[in-house]
Length: 519
Image 1 (cartoon, rainbow, N blue to C red):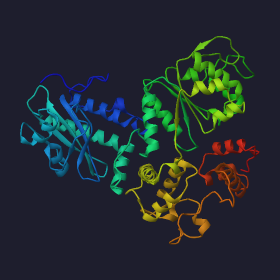
Image 2 (cartoon, helix red, strand yellow):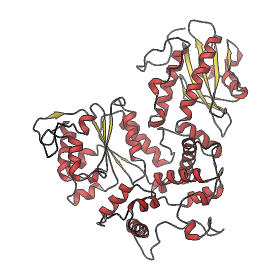
Image 3 (spheres, one colour):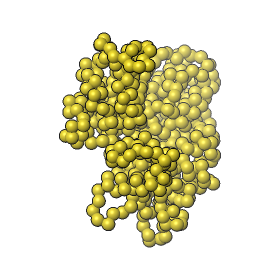
Image 4 (cartoon, rainbow, N blue to C red):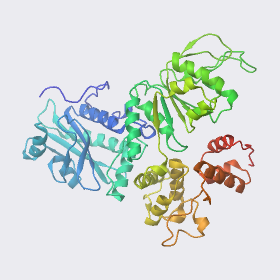
């Protein structure tokens, strides 16, 4: 029959054994990693095929809108995708009956084999089921190498593997997207990076840039408002890069006092300052071979900017209080919500650093510009995730009125605000999320659960100006009003605004508002 068609991806060979418990160990931690899902699934199918000594393997998912199966990861060099109707072929029969099935040569292969030009001698397929027992896919292998057909032992092994695969997939945004598609059958199933949800044109562009940049060593500058997902993309750039198995180290320039930032980044020598009793490595050294994510780059003091430029240009630094040159092997990804070009013109950011750090620039859109489909897609994704996290079963439903309220809002806190809003509603509702369960400004303004018919959208959280007023000015006025309403308590005001306390402090600093906390 010849060598298997799946490529060698550098994974250790899977011995033929009844013990399949270690199949997914090298791919563990998926739920917390922003992996490229297509790449992950392809590696997964390579391992499944190797475990069964099969020539080919296919992961089919059930399309909720069409009711058929579509291949998402497969050894199909002839075609990009195969769709199988329920009852068609071995995989379609499993989808229809929910029972594992294996078969030898026969006419049931003719349709797919004619499409691919591949001759199937034997096939084995088993269902993929979620925790509730619902069938959401089929796992299939073709042509058992060294034997005419798949055996009972092979079937038992693939059933065990399928349980692992289903559990892993259920923890990803892929499964959440399938769940969302059941509620929105008109919206196609789509995903790219795990935990990053959205199919709008602006997000598709972000995916394209991120996927190209991830495979390189290029420095990336992520730009966008607070809460748009910059850190998720930073992690995606790391976990889909050749450095994925090395450290990922984050430095938040807005969360550290200026006097400590240099020490955190570059480390210090013994005796560099009072209390420096020993040498301490900085974040760049701690990330050896990996990625350093510098969040809120615009907050980096000018003195530290010159040292960062040296790291970018020469991959070397000197610890505070030292003179020895330390070589570092890191990739740098930075993020900011600030207009760095304007800061350069104002003399608050080095021009040479600005040009060096934006080798690849990735702009993330605010949620209000991503369209209603992305907002609802995200809401349903967060709904499923929050239900799992808080052990709420069955997953609550979103009422039409709740969806309408969600779509009417401008989401000044972006994706982070939407996630917090949905999580609160999951905790408070009784099976169905109604508008009153959503902790959004508007209900208290109107004094009722929602707008009366014909009123249109809900009241905006940012007071409407009588004349022309910039969005930034309106935001400042609203933030200060909320802060005043909470007696200057920054923690309470940040919760009401659905933003992080550090974000609020940074905004106050930008507006030259004294950062006194009433808490």
